[in-house]
Figure 1 (cartoon, rainbow, N blue to C red):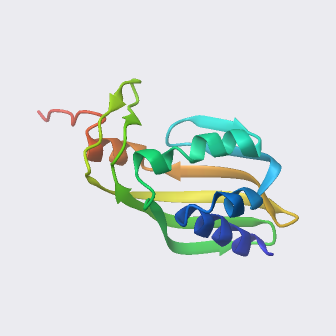
Figure 2: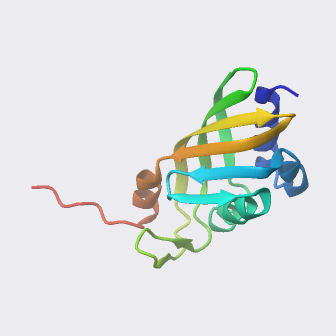
Length: 145
């Protein structure tokens, strides 16, 4: 599979809660960098431990709406919007847990991946974490002057 096809399959598997297929798209030495939270994982197992809890906080229907794909022989970039509702506890930037609000989530994101031998070796996941936190009340809206 080419880089774009692997990236699309990874997103399909996430969207459908198909964790076996999702894991199959990742290289064993996969490196994951989540720039919205400053979290990082080395290895497919630890990365899945960071990624899967999003489905607990935002529900099993949490999905990425694919807007565009840019690809080269070994790189794929997905432009998407994460959509769902806040249905489970979520950690706030200060560490406290934000109780479920059931507010609708629409978070712009970009995932930049390197693919080798049909598997993703690394991913940089950029998303609007401030927008997400403002939506669910995880941070206060600053007062205006």
